[in-house]
Length: 389
Image 1 (tube, rainbow, N blue to C red):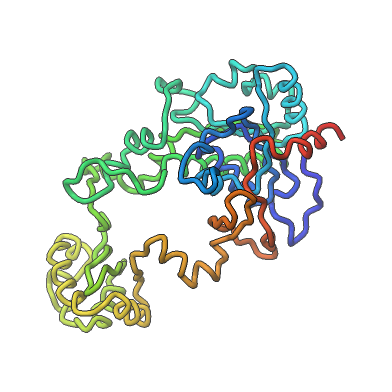
Image 2 (cartoon, one colour):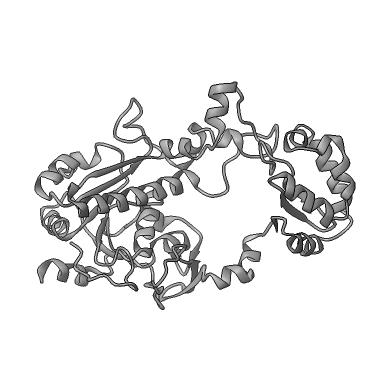
């Protein structure tokens, strides 16, 4: 249980120990967020093989960059939970942990003898975090699921891509990542609840639930108006101009989210005539004439390069951006200023660059060094010392 005396510079979860049985992405992403908030995360992995994602490419010197990017700052111990000696170690770890996280199919932990009811009776202060495709209840509860299943069933794939395109996956694993985010939030809330005397709880997160929670206004639009959201490319479903536009050399994103910003944009690009066009007087009219507006804007925007337009639009205070590749993100001064690319010295990979900590909390100084992603069972001695004194 937490033993650190907090002060202004203490990370919020300093002193919290998390026992992490999860693998691949949803659970490990959750526990990575907890490490960024200061928790100690102990990965419990299969002997020899470890987390499934250790086998996912790309690789450097045989080590998975996929695994490394989500599992730095963690420790690893290999335990076979079907072997009595390893179960004994695991149960001692449960006794000194604040949180346990798993993302198995519902019922798996019960078969191992470590379901919520049994653990809560034996370890009443242990918070239990679970992420799965469909959660602990409902007719789909026991079904297998991966990110693509959640994206497709939750409606997001039907809204992604260009008009009339085939079903399109979001470019990152938003099914897993959203579940990991919601699980982390739920666990932090459960830690707070326990600290207030409310006792430990189980946090049950379903990937499908999280996809629905991300649908913005699409659910209400269908419920009230029977409007079904469709792929719109880069366009916003209700606001214009609010999309990527072609320039002389690439694209510029313009997000003029209200009439005032539309006016600033029109002046900045040298098109004050747009303000007199009866089809563009309000956002509702601009949205109704979105293709005409796109054609009208691109006739002007194609005359100059993206950076030229960014310069004039930023001076005018119009929200805008380039469409960066990952390579361009690496060169962005704002990314550097926020310390959002972090280098880790890994004994196998060498220099490993990962996303930095997005939690910027006043008074809290980010660690100068990060732990390299662990090898399977690489921290066994230190972890055993935790339970053996």
